[in-house]
Length: 351
Ligand code: NDP
Image 1 (cartoon, rainbow, N blue to C red):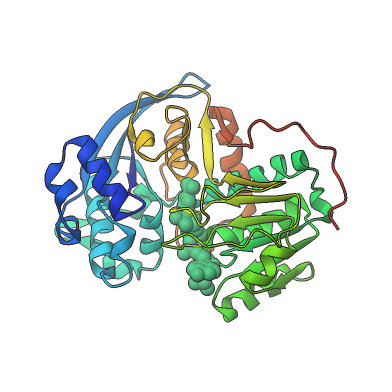
Image 2 (image 1 turned 90 degrees about the horizontal axis):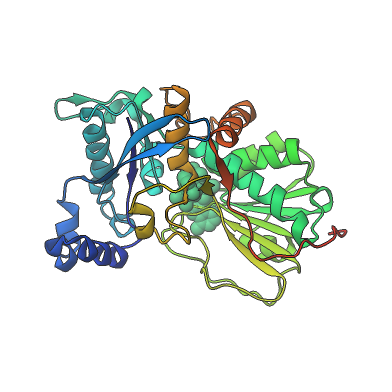
């Protein structure tokens, strides 16, 4: 059996969900109520691969909320640990740490946080799911930019959150496998950006957000932002593809304009219906088919019997691992979410 650990995108969303699920104390409670709530197993379900193999899984809400950061970081971290200990006690072979859960965990000094009361966490039972997420985001760029007439070998691609676990993998892939013309690297800490730029060499440039976004034909958003960014759309290049892989979303979902296309990043569609409710809660367009790529990674590891912490720590994702999980993804019936209702445009020069 596999597990998925998730959380709500905000306090207000969490309260609404609690009301829908009949948890009235939490629907009416304040942040302190949520801080003291243990993890909740909300659902169990089965999933069938295109190969015919069937597996069982469970969804656990860690009851972590982005509003707990940064002032209640210890509480937030404890909630992640408690959810992990719970998953391990249930005997799940592999569990994905969704959304901010993995980010909090990546920041830990692992050895110090391995013990949760009487439980010693076994790292091999957990994955951040970031390798599959990075691969899916790259596929979303590769499949959708040409549909808008953007030739990637002549395109400038800004990566916001470039130095993060997913961002770094995306940069390396887009440079080495996709062959984009130029990468524009955006993050706050200059030192980490310089290290990444040295690794990438020619063909990458460090720019502040306000400068990078208007210069880019494609923008990949993979920054760990607790709130969405306000964007001035008047000075963007057209056509422009924005792939928003953040959770919570980095961009306002209502953002639109002529030749400006925003795609939900890091989301996959499964080949058949899954009889679960949790993705309705996550506001997916087709909740029985769509899910976060990190959750899909736990399913892939379970389908394949790769019971190992496939994605772990920060900036350890290799292109070979992305290829490996990508092949498994296709084999079992996952597909990257694409732009809908588009007539394919002939590829134009983006420079
Ligand atoms: P990391 O914490 O490893 O990286 C975050 C990156 O964002 C860093 O480069 C960080 O650099 C940058 N960043 C943070 N704040 C800002 C800011 N204000 N302006 C510019 N850059 C910023 O995160 P991950 O790579 O693990 O995850 C990235 C995103 O993807 C998250 O939103 C996460 O929730 C989401 N995600 C989605 C999944 C899915 O299945 N769809 C799965 C896993 C994650 P610096 O601190 O220097 O600014």
